[in-house]
Amino acid sequence: MPMSKFELTKSIEARKLKKSSGLPLPEPPATISFGSIIENVKQVGRMARFTFLFNLYETEYSVLELAMKPVRAATIEPAAAAEPPQPAKKPAEASTAAAPAPSREVKFRWEEIATTHGVLLRAKVPGGWLLDRGTGLMFFEDAKYKWDGTTS
Image (cartoon, rainbow, N blue to C red; front, side, top):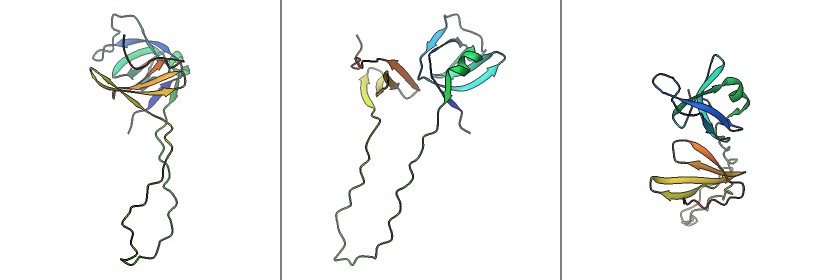
């Protein structure tokens, strides 16, 4: 059974927890940006525990409940209506050229950015960039899309 995933609809503050004991780590709360994907949400009393980028976090359940929405599973487009069967062609009539595949407009584009730690993918979304390194998605706020993919 797949785990439920949720998208944050606003940024939240959460404490990072030690995976083995569930105790808070001695560091300040982390800001988890809106648009981030979190998983394994569990209510523990008035607190909520969840994973983000494979790390365990905790925040007040009332805060998290107002800041998350379920991520829907990708929908599969229905196959095109089947064409009626065509009579078999005689060998002389058979075409050797394959029919071109129907074109589909690409509405979501990922760009590859080469880094010293492998490839980073980014996609332009409202208000900034969606980033993917294969370990989870992250949102980078950049309303004017000035980030060219380089570091300073």
